[in-house]
Length: 493
Ligand SMILES: Cc1ncc(COP(=O)(O)O)c(C=O)c1O
Image (cartoon, rainbow, N blue to C red):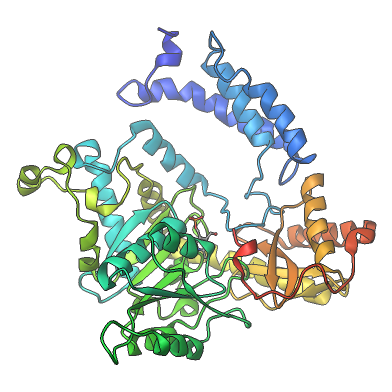
């Protein structure tokens, strides 16, 4: 038996007392690691990080443990020192959210109590919290739909998978997924995983799906009976990974409706805008989709994982029905114990929804809207600064909070090399995206606290790094890299 402190449990009446000194250690190590890092990510690239991590983590399984305090202090510090910290204003590559402190604190409770949402007897309160939040999310996405429902997922990928699975189960295995070239790669992987035909990819030269092109594809699908349209699932995106573009949802809903197709909208990025009155118009039409993916660990400031699949008609979830005697016996259910297994394809399931419940209640609609507005304002400001700077080129005004830009006249190879240089120096974490046949630096702004001075500094870092090493630039045009469709999966996270 290890020393009492190492074997102490996080739950139970003594749990909080056991946790408190560890929390002090964790918080001190987080601060220490961030101070050592001195920036958005560690300088020196993978080799430097690996050296420090190996030193702290080896041996992974010592014969005699080093003790809880030492293990926590050493590993948390090295984790923080080697983090790409989305709370840093210069860390803006991906849809990688800086979590709110209140959400991280709530998540601690889920970790300590460890409710598992595969059966009511492992999660009595958490199951009810999940039911309440799911109902609230469902009502936001599909207001007025009496049977609207929502499932909790690990993110956009799982939500997209479930949407395709439901389409396959409801329309038959011959259903054809029709998606834009701007769709997230998880749509393609879901079709592959589910044994469905590869999605029909509609080109998106302007970054968004063209409803006329979708109609054209749907009109050419042949159903089993002569004259009938083939079963199809149209997948639209509200907030593309590369550029934050929003497909024309109402027109796509019309197109899908005209051919009897289902409509899924991947709103992993843009879904939260429904809660912000000043921006909800950007995702108008979500309510017309049969299924909608949302993901609050993107725009939503949640620790991973915080996804949802909203379903307009809860009856569509019937294919997920399943009962295992040891988790949801029929007689238990008949006696009033809620069955949970049909709410996911996973069995053991963390109470990921708990932090969402705490956050939404803490901020309210007004607080969420303020954070959304601040984030949008930061993106607009960054785009403005880029547009004013003759050394930089802006792709387009941001649709949501993603800004694509590059040094004026730089070739694709130079853009890629510049991004890597900023990473290696530990100065900035910017993404890359292909749009209009060219490669761009991508700043995905999700941090509502970013100031104008942070954004100016970020651009200064970019222009100075480009000026310092234009030789790596290569030709302004890029014979090595033929023009590509906007939003190809290659650069999508
Ligand atoms: C539009 C879109 N959909 C889905 C996903 C996948 O979400 P997750 O990584 O949470 O599974 C992403 C990830 O960035 C995304 O950008």
